[in-house]
Length: 75
Image (cartoon, rainbow, N blue to C red; front, side):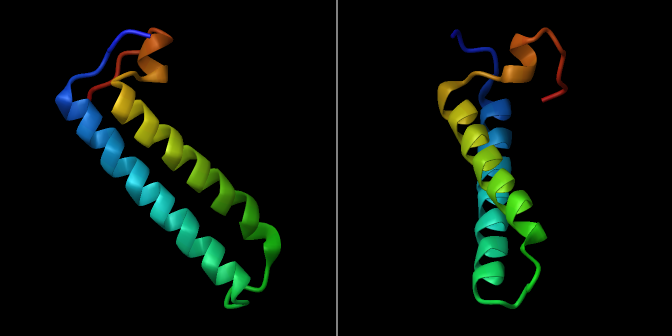
């Protein structure tokens, strides 16, 4: 995998990944403490955490999945 994003793209993906992970962890805590009683939010919480981890990995590797598929991204 070759680097296909610049420093601006790496920073954007890092910040997006951290925010996504934080949201997912917060949602997971709200579910476990029964503040949110529905377990229907469990899948979005896990998805947000996994997506955030992937975005942080993309930032660290300097590689973007969407760009590798040939789609032009503005950042």
